[in-house]
Amino acid sequence: MRTQEDLPEDDDDFDRPSKSQLKRESHDLQGLGEDLMTLPASRLEPLNLPEILLDALRMAKKITAHEGRRRQMQYIGKLMRRVDPAPLREAVAAYKLGHAKDSLALHESEAWRERLLADDAALQSFIAEHAGIDVQQLRSLVRAARKDAAAAPEQRSGRAFRDLFQFIKTERLRVNPAAEGEAAEDEEE
Image 1 (spheres, rainbow, N blue to C red):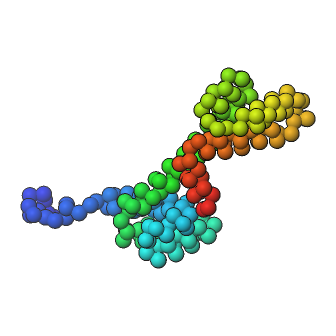
Image 2 (cartoon, one colour; image 1 turned 90 degrees about the vertical axis):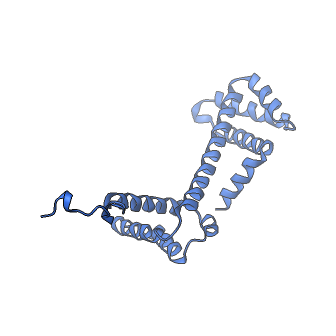
Image 3 (cartoon, rainbow, N blue to C red; image 1 turned 135 degrees about the vertical axis):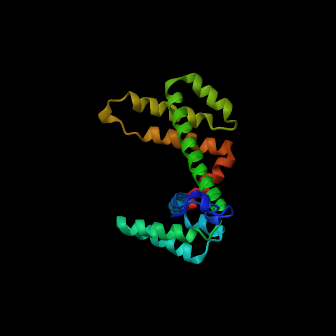
């Protein structure tokens, strides 16, 4: 039996990563593969992934059986060992950030709608922030939405709420064109 003292000083066994570290890296690559599956094809093309990996990702999207999908994800993780993961992580992060910005813009539009319905001072504030807005149309939409809100729940149509929201969203995109480019890009996908 060999003891610690019998081992040579220059033993290379301890220079390589542990089995646990290799497993963690493999699971990280599988997770990145799952994130890549959420990307539309138009976002995958510029990444210059190997064709075999693209095929594996397309196949994984089609698999519905749990065990089959798990095995396909393991295969994708294996294929991803040959690819530099840094640009892939950046692409996934950029895609998720775009969706977060879109979601934030929708929530801000909803908040504006609620403020406009609750207070006339918010109407003046919105007009001041959005130069060149069609004030008459905005006031008309706010009146219609308030009238609809005052009606009995059975008699509400909800159309005025939707129209006001669409008007607010359009005006916010007109004032902030950078958000419009991101929204148009996501709609194409």
